[in-house]
Image (cartoon, rainbow, N blue to C red; front, top):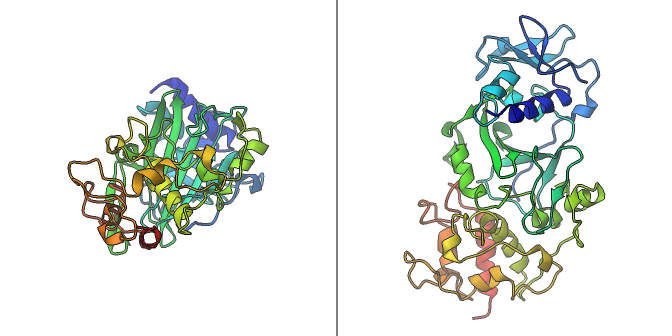
Length: 403
């Protein structure tokens, strides 16, 4: 792995107040000591930590993938720490992509036990969310100090090198996995998924697995591999799906929003409009339907990026942020490509995507109510449970469309 990438993540850990200490020597490693998806509560920000709080990561020869009580140690000052097999900086330097094996080393937390966040890691909730089978989610972004998001193309932001995104998934309140995307070069992102252990004191990098012990609506929870993640993220020019102008400018966005990016001078050029509104088509449902289609289809698979998984379908569902001023949506590209349009697919022949007045005849309804496999359902991957709320919403919208 490039020393530059490794040094960057080690620097983030140290700058965040995470002293990485080897248990036998007690000496610092990698630097000197430094001070409708369900949403979950925000972890304690590291800025609230007392100056006497202990280092968050301690290395040892024990296996921490599923620690018992002995795997959580107390430092001399009485605080908790995680026992690691290999020091964080060594994990990062030896990794091919710059990501460590241990969740405690990815730079999200200064203390994985108390869930204290690294300084400058900010939480956010998009105003349009991706359906994740009902799992609870929490999202964070780390933007390098002194850098700005390039919004020259307002619909396709470019992030500075060193940007990191984290996304945590919970089921029944229990942490199951955390995903990371870190920009390491102008055209490259390191990506990984980390599986939490049972007592949520840490976790290990996963290559993707089904969790038989974690069920949503009777189906096993699936932790995707990095390659599976890229099937969706590869449809975005700079990979990130939910941190973009539309998602951060719509009502419901929270944490860091489009307005916050402008106020804090974190984006350039600054958008003329930071409060976005999607109009209607006379049905009373179009705004919410197009929001759903944008986030669940448009930002990943169905857009004009030739790398997008469904580019050849000519069904482009990504909204144009410059149009979101409350105007009627009937001339929006996503609306025009859905309503009374024939599918461009040999599999579906002459089926009509949306038949006004008839959900039963509409191909869209068939696909969003199916979980029969990638070629038979929407979204094609990463979902085993039908999104009942939005299915009914789309049916109501179609019924209200005049034939």
